[in-house]
Length: 100
Image (cartoon, rainbow, N blue to C red):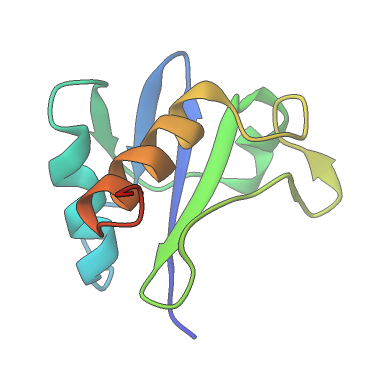
């Protein structure tokens, strides 16, 4: 399975820029975010893990899935944060999952 890794630090979303597969779900998420939060296109190092506020992956199979830890290091409080929850909600709206 291929997925894209996105993190949140200081209310900015960080995701790799060049040299990665631009997945469809990642592309849609970045479009949906559009201006709600700044996006920094760069690689995230494992050493940054303790200082991250949130993390999530995007993939066609899992859509948007929060990540609680990396290499046994808890991300934020270990629970989906407000930006990850908003991204999940935006994607579910986009996919028609929040319709009655």
